[in-house]
Amino acid sequence: MEAFSDFLKLLDGLLGGSVWFPYILLGVGLFFTLYLGFPQVRYFKHAWLVVTGKLDRKGAPGDTSHFQALATALSGTVGTGNIGGVAFAIYLGGPAALFWMWATAFLGMTTKFVEVTLSHKYRIKTEDGTMAGGPMFYMDRRLNMKWLAGAFAIATVVSSFGTGNLPQSNNIAIGIESTFGLSPAITGGVLAVLLALVILGGIHRIAKVTSSIVPVMSVIYVVGALAVIFYNLENIGPAFGSIFSQIFTGSAATGGFLGATIAYAFNRGVNRGLFSNEAGQGSAPIAHASARADEPVSEGMVSILEPFIDTILICTLTGLVILSSGVWTEKHLNDFDKTETSIIAGQYSDKDDEDKNNLFLYLNEEKGHNIEMYNGTIEVVSGKAQSQGFTILHARSVAEDVRFLLSEEEDLYTGSLVIQNGKIQKENIILRGKSLIHSAELTTEAFTRGYFGDYGQYIVSIGLLLFAFSTAIAWSYYGDRAITYLIGPRGVMPYRVFYVAGFFWASFSDTALIWDIAAIAIVLMTLPNLFGIMLLRKEMKQTVKDYWSDYESKRSGS
Image (tube, rainbow, N blue to C red):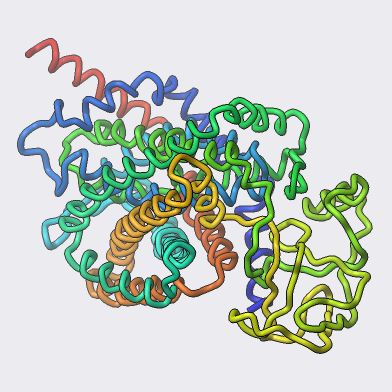
């Protein structure tokens, strides 16, 4: 498993964690923002008119209303990226990561406008009378690039697991276990059954369920977030200050957080922003293709609202909750994930400036540090290490009060442990101690620092359950549309079976591994889509021009 994890980290470094990917993503968004004249600003008000149905035309082809299509697409984006993803970005890159999430969302509003418009324009009606659309259809029908369409469809199937399935189930299980103490396997089993009941009903049932869940879950989460923000109102100014100060100084080392470079914050912020709002990934166009509309641009208008709601509103609330509460720099008692744990030679303290600088360089993979992996033996008596000359790192922090256990029931270990290249060689050892936390666990802790006190964790658990479950529902639809394109309707049922099984499996699997899979899957889906919409840039501009010409003509004639 560790070898597989190392392979995923290497692949992530070549793709999502690479230097070039964020620039491509933001570059395409910036190009279309300038090329189309800032549509995310100019068309924002018009988008609200479209989604309310005030501009609907009777008899327009499609399966869902504009609002239902938006709700389905939002259910695919508003998920663990808003709860666990924001926390993960701040944990990795510091407060500045939130700024880059904003930038990704602002430019992503235009990217999504383009991809949805083009995908809606080239959608098809399937044999059963329902609509099917998405980037693979404009790639096939307009660009005549079946190879690109096939590559995108395959990436969509992979991403349906890596983005919409595995991390959603994993974060639900973690949240429910930490709040209610329920076994992840039980949580995963119950929700897997419910998921199967919903997705078997197709787009009509999916749209009905998501259009009910999205408004409810948003209100619950926003109320809970504001309860923390207003409780810590005096920290909001410093929270914003930390975001921008890190951008200019390059480090936000404070408390248990050992800092991140500007490049690290930029990279992680952009990648987590994409994971949250999916602008450029090509997923949302699949949901919007079902909307009743005979003007593709009108549905593109609706999609402008998604990154705004998802990232600029909800992700910002999550970020401010985490930063203003201060929990992101605190160490908390937890069981250590093996993939996030390493033992280094020498004794280091995050309270010593020289040590902090060394650790900063090491954790950010910069040159100039002298840290090496520990190789040797650790003697343990009643769970406590008796040996010296090493430091345990977990979750990018110096671990404290570490105990070595044989089980989660406080079965303290006594004996010798062989350490090779910073890893414990004995399989069944559990490390428990204080370190930084991240993902949904960090957001859950932050929500307890408000007016609701410990009850705030229930808001996160309920919100996480609704967010993540609705995301899994939406992504099952994206995946089965891709399967339909690739091999036809006969592949849909086997896909749904694997999808439900994967949802159950991920509920009790390693969280760090899940995030690595998700990061890779996103890139494999995004690159073909960005390439495709760039090839159709001139057609997109003309399509928008024709839309406004037709719109003004009908207004003057009414």
